Length: 499
Ligand code: NAD
Image: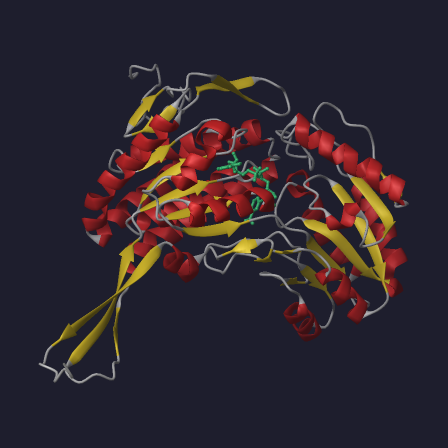
């Protein structure tokens, strides 16, 4: 079956196809702006889809549609909403290889990363399926005679989701899934490089799972056309943004400045320090740090951006780290043996090459490197880096590892905290409680003792401090973020008012 825009409909178990437009008001159709954007495989350069872009009228229709459908959706029984979430999870299971294939082709994920992203995606869907039965209100004590005080937990209404390209499906869905489960409508704007995995594929899954049409909408357009309008629109009550600090700051300002103030949840950039203390198990620290730095070519907000090593173990760490990195295979991301695939686009590649030049010019010593092959940048390692160098201070979204030598724990902590960011971090020591004490001193939302900095879970508080953002994902934290408390009192007596 095909609809009028030529998009294949689903429900047949066949691979999803026909990703050439928008998903608005329950219809698969081209956008009204009319321009076409090519969606390409960052490794092969093949065209995966051509999207006909949306304009502000499409965006307006999407928000109105979400608002209209939300009323009936929120009124359903919790078990009815949970059932849709569980069916979505089952479809994700049935289509696991199809989803992984899309993540490899569209976002340049290595097979390992794509499998990890699928796990995150599936896990948050199951967690979200529990939310309809966990969104509890409370009856509160109150110091007023004859009066009852209640806090009702209500959906927000409509939530706008803006997501990046690096973990596109998971980072869109960690907002979409909980938002829907809690009775909200959603409009999502995926990143330019990942319209399918960041939005359209998710919409297909929900369509097949029986989500009411119009509740979830995917709008794909130019930021110049629909970017600011997405946040300024009066319908969404919260904008859930995941992306760079620069754009997140702009979204936060817009959310306060429009005719209708709204909440924001901002998950922004990072510059994770990974600290190797003098009593660390160096071999374990090396293996973990290699993953923390090079997983998905370093294009993760939690990626280990700075490796900070105590002078007592510095030489041993550098020797082992360098030897390990030299053995990493890079190239075609669909090859299961490949650790490092392509970076997402030519602009990102140019930024990485500029950082490499900058590090050399600043006096950092390059011990591993190589020229790019297409969009595949071989792993780079710089030693003798100081924390004031740009290669240490900037968020480096590529396979480049700066190693910094420090003298003792106090200096390690000072250097770790000397950054505008505060998302993830890691510390290695054989003394676990020393690790926890150190972790408590790190100005970050997340610190992992004896593991690398890239971790996420559907049940824990995920989020950043400082310029890494505002808000928390996961478990009860996102449950509260995507609902509102409505305080309602009932006066059972007739108080003696003074006038
Ligand atoms: P980006 O900020 O350039 O883009 C993110 C999204 O914002 C995209 O969908 C983009 O189209 C959109 N956008 C840009 N300008 C906009 C505007 N004016 N109005 C509305 N939308 C707009 O980020 P990116 O390059 O896609 O992703 C990389 C960044 O994301 C890194 O800084 C990374 O650390 C961060 N990130 C953070 C987390 C987290 O959980 N904290 C997770 C992943 C990525």
